[in-house]
Amino acid sequence: MISRMAIAVCIVFLLADTSVALEPSGSQANSAESFPPPAELVRTAVAKEVAAANASSMKHMFRDYKKSGQGSQTRIYVETREAMAGMTIAYNDKPLTPQQLQGEEGRLANLLRSPQQLERKRRQEKEEADHTLCIVKALPDAFSFSYDGSENGTATLGHEGARLLRLKFRPNPAYHPPSHVEEVLVGMRGVVLIDPVAHRIARIDGTLFKEVTFGWGILGHLDRGGHFLVEQHALGDGSWDISRMSLSFNGKILLFKSIAIKSDEVFSSFQPVPADTSFAQGVQMLKAERVRLAEGGAESAKAESSSH
Image 1 (cartoon, rainbow, N blue to C red):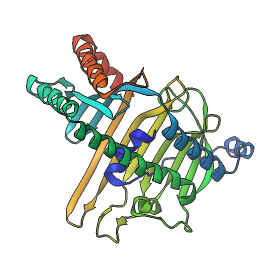
Image 2 (cartoon, rainbow, N blue to C red; image 1 turned 30 degrees about the vertical axis):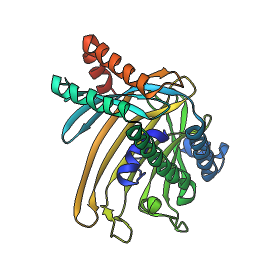
Image 3 (cartoon, rainbow, N blue to C red; image 1 turned 120 degrees about the vertical axis):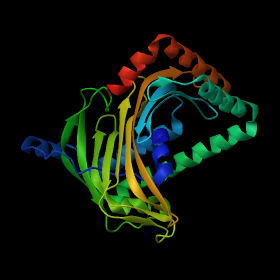
């Protein structure tokens, strides 16, 4: 979960929530009595997420289907021991033109030829993941939590069929952000879904209920109403990863530059790859997968991504 959440946090230093939580029934409300205090459950789940991010040796190849105001983009990724290898294979559900494909392959070739560029990419990915970890670690202290019923897991949310506990969260007035990375937390309230058996976070879905400024407004601000959603699922090999991520934000950076972010991403077709996969090997896997999809799997890939 942490690695893909870094994509969003890198953009807006944000985790948030939604106001569409279902009202708990009487039986759901009473069932909370058999579980630990809400803050304890969240703290345990956060500790498990952090431990998984720091210790996991599981690596995968997967597909990313992203829709935004500019259209859609399909990319494939391979996690490697050096950095994430990625390749765009379609725009607006159409294969790349020869010129676009040449550009993608040229970009990857440049990374392979330049250890300095590859090392820069690795450092950037680590910095983004570290920022995300800062926010995830802050969740138990930044918010007050209360039980709000439960939902069942699906193929793309937690464990399929498993009971997921839903908790509302709102800002903890006693919390003081230690840095600008965590400042956005004071403007959020929402809902988190937790698997109480696996102690993993299945969903964080939220909305900014007020404008949030960074660096006393000098660095920028995010407008009220911004929305963030991340869903995570079990892959069947002992690991969990992101299945969906949605962003919708407006604001300004450095007082003058307006930002308008609206996108929805679906991550699918996870396949395990060897833990010691090198970046060069990852690039070869990407090229082979692109050819495989081009020879007959492109339409099924589109249908699979759209079904989520």
